[in-house]
Amino acid sequence: MDYEEIIYQVDESIATITINRPDRLNALTNLTQAEIRHALDQSERNPRVIGTVLTGAGRGFCAGVDMNSLSNISEDGKRKDMSFKHLEAHPGNPDNDPNFNSSPTYFLGLRKPLIAAINGACAGLGFSYATFCDMRFVDPRAKFVTSFGPRGLIAEHGTSWMLPRIIGPSNSLDLFWSSRQLLGDEAYRIGFANRLCAEDKCLTEAQDYLREIAGTSAPVSIMMMKKQVYRHLMQALGDAMDESTRWMDESLARDDFKEGVQSFVQKRPPNFAKIDID
Image (cartoon, rainbow, N blue to C red):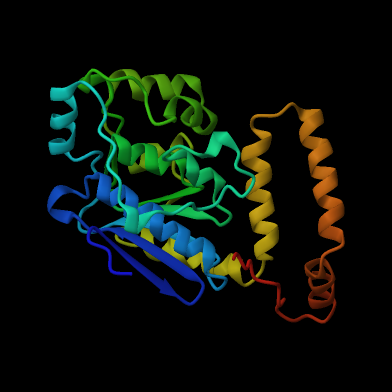
């Protein structure tokens, strides 16, 4: 499909979504968000794809919501929902868990990994998008700003729930209250960035990471471990243990387990089953 505001590419087992509005520092419109959602659905349905990298064109990752859109909202005092029928998509969340229906919380319900390659400015809703990705590979020149307080807003888009789980309550309140600029090295130091990459290498390093796990780990195992992590954040330990035990028994009965053992014994790369979604 030809998209207007993103570029979607698949290279062997790796999908890449590039927000392609560099003249606006990749600020998000309703169309951009709908195209990202649709492209992620394409990744989910492509059995060759092990995971997706989200990045931005030019010198920015994503500067938040396009200011023209914000101006229209502020004049009316409410959100405006726009429908793009040709981009209708329902990526991930096969159990229809209500926690994973909103944007960008639906990132957590995706069956496959989603990594943010943050190459520059990352603010507002762009910051929220990065927060809800599974991992963040960051250029040392990246700059993060929450931007909520200076616009008279609260911590929105689910960041008040997710960010403290990544960097703790105090660090989160600091970034929310001050809306100060967080640079790449500090983002790595406080645990927001999983990788502090060499300059101009965050996209390549994120793609290489997915390529590496594609060669070593079963796609169904990757999917189930992501499901465990995010579901069990909202469960008591006993419930999480019970569910993990049940899913462990299911994994022992899969062909992937046999293949994992045989490939280890035979000292060869494993040939695991793909995730095939109708």
